[in-house]
Amino acid sequence: MSMLTPPGMGGQYKITGDKYPRMRPARRRGRVVVAAVASVTVLGVLGWGTLQLIDVFTGGDKASAAGAAGCATTARASASPAAAVLPKPGRVTVNVLNATTRSGLAQKTADELKKRGFRVGDVSNAPKEYDKKVAGAGVLLGPAASAKTSLTVLGTQLPGAEHRTDPARKGAAVDLIIGNGFKGLAKPADADAALARLTAPRPTPAEEKKSC
Image (cartoon, rainbow, N blue to C red; front, side, top):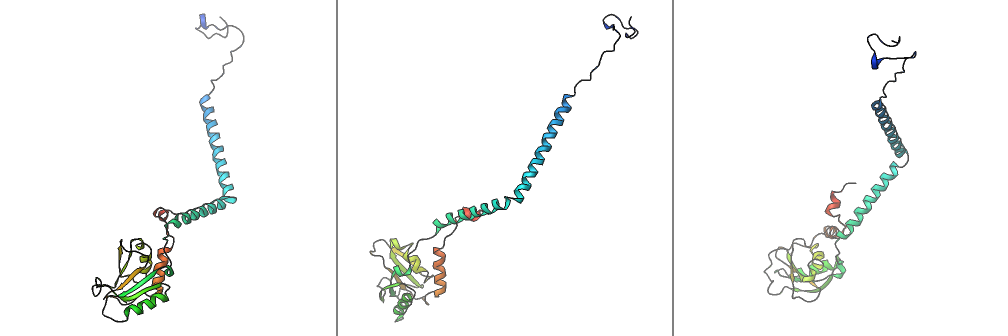
């Protein structure tokens, strides 16, 4: 028995020779992998933080400004198609007809409309179907094509008037039939403001909800 063999062991467990065997510890691969992953993560975080600092001190403000400008451009582009296309008062011919018993009312109203830039056609009493039969401020009557054009523009001068169209009517002129409730045209400033609101560009519902 060799002196290297522990007492009580022999056979296949017998150790011969005069040198101790070198016992190497098992490699701890799990710890190596964990350490590598942790290193990569730390490097990634440091790199991301560096990029954020560079963005703040160099191009961050420029990018924000470009985004805001792009947002404003989109809002303007989408708002333009929503603007109403209406004729100028100078392109609207108005016949002023008096359906009341107050004399001279048609001429006075026609003169005021002319001062405001409208073209004045006939000035006379209302026809039988309307004479003394209009209880409100008045009736604005025109051909079918004038519903969203000439009648809309004329309506800014007399907000309380009723709008009517006649499909059989020819020509482009419209009638302002003065009723018993008529107290005068709208103030020039109010009429101009109403017309400006009709023709001003308006954003679409989608753009109204969008915040930039």
